[in-house]
Image (cartoon, rainbow, N blue to C red; front, side, top):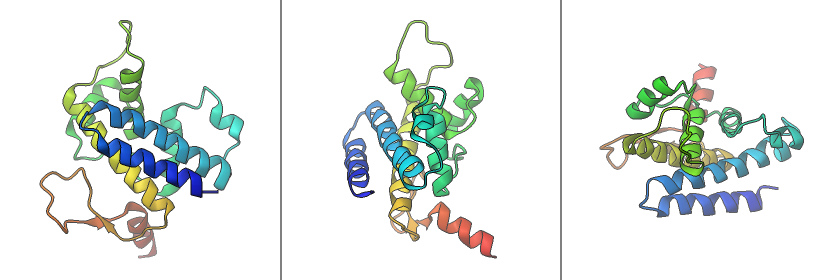
Length: 176
């Protein structure tokens, strides 16, 4: 069941890392998250019906949030993303999935009648990095990886400066 979706996700992941542009990776990341969310939530774990997943009332932010929760990945905007945190406060975004999908929607559905707070370059750069981080973590979780990884959000990180993946850390925390 996972052979084709994982290959597709890795293809999209490579693509989002291939662009020097800030905005295109945010858009590609959304496709990657939808693919993984559908496969995990509907086909694999069957935590929801396909018609519920496709229902227009179940927004992209909800799909990303549910995907991250199922994989043990925190949904809060990381503290390293200062611009996203500030923008989120003004825009009323509840978490990182909400912020990422709102910025993606701003890019894909621009309009003069746009309602809300517009992102700036720095916030979109953080959204790009966070999209890449979530893509990496989702793929690693689905492949069963439990070792350390280097967070792309940490500026000035040295080679070997790693941390445990969130789901491995959570299982260690709960067992102590």
